[in-house]
Image (cartoon, rainbow, N blue to C red; front, side, top):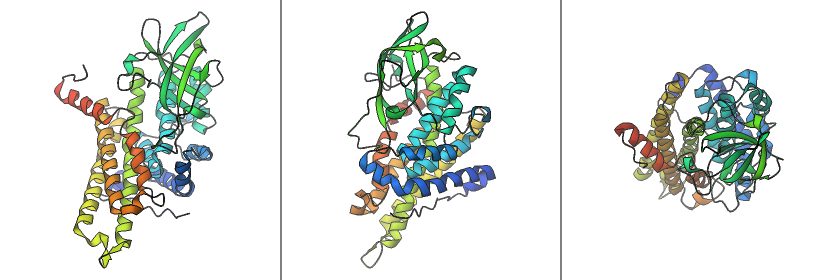
Length: 392
């Protein structure tokens, strides 16, 4: 078992922009990843299994709903704290970060923002502590980038709702206790429903044979005449804007998380470049390798500045959906490019589980697609700057 020797790059001294609380929160998450994630994650990824024993640790470092108020079990932190925690977790593994950001932004966030006081008190403390794990049902077999076309529907049966349909590519689904599910009512209006494991007709088959996010549990949500109590409908917001508001929060976390994956690949490649001798000197002494490393640290630094500013805007309630899209697209594209370049620097060793780079590279192939694809985010930015809709 190799020691985790990671050293975080901070080329522009961005730590000076963080509060002492920010740094304490980040450092606690970093140490937890080094101690509890790095030593085991390659084995779990090879076995395509999620390490459920880390759920308690994720809760302890505040990874579940860090910005949820303390009265509901959250830590009451700001948006930059949330981003820093996601950065450190994804430095360990994108799949582990997926578990945390789904729990925070796609389950706890909608219950807090759109739920009743009864729903908040019933679910949020247990979700914050990790006693309960949730998932988010939006994507369907026939509707990915166009969630408004969803076919999952529910009917008002008087004393309950009857839910039918299916969702797929759902992180946490195989072991989730609850699912926040988006479905259309009889008038075609989208609403959120809290579906609990054990409800008759609700099943969560696991998705197998993934080459990416192998240490994350992915599955489907199947609803076959599921009776959902009326008190499980999220009452405070409906329409497509409701799930998209959750995706804003998740995409913000991903923008930070992708930096963590990129930092890990860069740090691994930098260390290797000083140790690997070819033609009588370290490969880091050759111009082409220095070019790769210089470009990596430049792009990481630009992404750090982008997300820090976005975090400030989020804290002030000023960040737009389009700004969040830009950061998600840019940072994941940056990270996947760095992962590929770092893999080349390690040569054949780069494809082995002895190093984290190939695992990050495979994981980022999912991250560049989920929560809005690379191309969709480009079109969101394009529409924002031109005022013209290219989606239709």
